[in-house]
Amino acid sequence: MGAMTEPKAIPEPRRSAPISRDTIGAFSARFRRIPVILQSYSVFAVVMTLANFSVFVRFAPQLYRSISPYLGGLGMIYMFTFFFVFAAISTPQRKLLYAVVMLIGLGVLFGVMDLGRHLAMSTETFVAIKDNPYLAYAPLRPVVTIVVPLAWVLLLLSPVMRKWMNSASVGNGVKDQYQFSLADLLYVMVVVGVSTALSVALVGAVSLKQSSLATPVSVSQPASSS
Image (cartoon, rainbow, N blue to C red; front, side, top):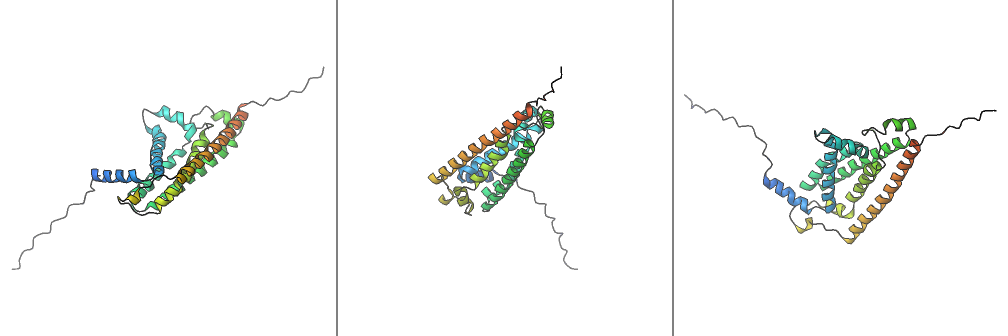
């Protein structure tokens, strides 16, 4: 009789390991070494996403109604950039950050289209929606939906950011440290200046349009013959 073979043990299914403190610590260390522009954008994207999700929070529907005329729902575009930001920080694929720039640029396009629809609005439509917080268009809305994302596009394409994206190192070396130079500071100042001028122009255009829509047009009555 041949020797009896023992039955093979069935391997247990692999379970996904929970996120360890080492993983969080490693990401935190890398986050502290990235340029301050990307750090600031990451915080901004989280705030904008939470602001847009406030409609789903039981205790914050009033908050959403208050900020909706300023956001117009376009703030959700920042939520879709989280994956690429996380991947660019955590892996050598730093050029994935260009996908963030493309998504934000798409948000700028939507903001321009939204502004165009408002400027082409009729008086009847304006009067019908001006008291509806979900449809109303605040004068500061083009700043939030056009100027701010456009400024982020320019900042994420700044020299210090391009230098960081073109480097594939994610180690702990000194070459991972990127400090602001005088040229980077001047670049940011130019972006802020252009953004401020554009904001003033867009807010003025929207305010002028809304003022003309809110002013009733007087119809002159023909003089009656005596």
